[in-house]
Length: 377
Ligand SMILES: Nc1ncnc2c1ncn2[C@@H]1O[C@H](COP(=O)(O)OP(=O)(O)OP(=O)(O)O)[C@@H](O)[C@H]1O
Ligand SMILES: [Mg+2]
Image (cartoon, rainbow, N blue to C red; front, side):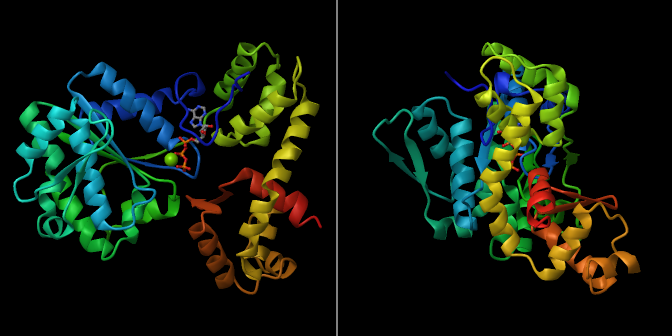
């Protein structure tokens, strides 16, 4: 039987719950061609939200085209330009003849080569000469705008793992160039998001950086408990198993509303359930989840310094004023400066989140593992 929960993949259709407000907000930005930046800790549902908003917006607006790129393995400008051009051309063409036509029409300085694969209809790609692109990147940066304008379309360029551009050679120069082109576009909107929260914040909220105030900045929230509870109950029911609201709430609580973990823990509980799921089953599923992840957590923990570990120990013990003399003494934190340095390093490693003076763990299961396994020993 197909299992009813999804994690680690984009959540679509019946696997996607709530986010009604955020979806409506993103769709309305797309329709008004407002640039959108989405920031959240890892695995809270950025990619799923953009996917949902993009498909819905296209259904509602026949003149809209989505051009979706993922920079997860893109490490330099050359690759970026080629992927961008490729995806824009494809998004604006429905048949391969159109790909050829658009390529001829919208490139003048750069002459890309068309490469046909086994299936010419679906398998046609563009090959660029980097020397040409390097001399004329503007043609690629304005490609979406030129096509949208000529064809009376609205194009939304969605770029996942956007923070990777901060690691290209000369990142500031490159970002300045992107921004100076993109902000002039009248028929195209950009939706930028990525999984490295602190790097996304650096790119978009540092006033000295080119992408500062580039668009509407959306900080995603977790999905609220009532939605998650209803979601789990329905997914169980759809497969002929039962779970009551209290048990669903327990799943959500143990996962601290983290969408990925809610689905994973629900799945592990579902697998252990014959007919009716109980709190005991959820408890067992949770222990097995922690066990399953412990090797990964050991690896993460091995990269931390003693001061960083002392800081985490104080944090999981529930200490609030870590720089107070008493707390520093108890957890062997050497000075207030050392505490702040540890906090910064842990935020940069995407272990902690520091927002409006509040510190929290990005991964609730890691926090649990530290508290009850690692530090408890
Ligand atoms: N709206 C939703 N309803 C239910 N589950 C969701 C929803 N959004 C996300 N999830 C769960 O969270 C997981 C991660 O979602 P997604 O990949 O969209 O997050 P992300 O923020 O893009 O992650 P990353 O930071 O790793 O890029 C999904 O596989 C799914 O299990
Ligand atoms: Mg993602």
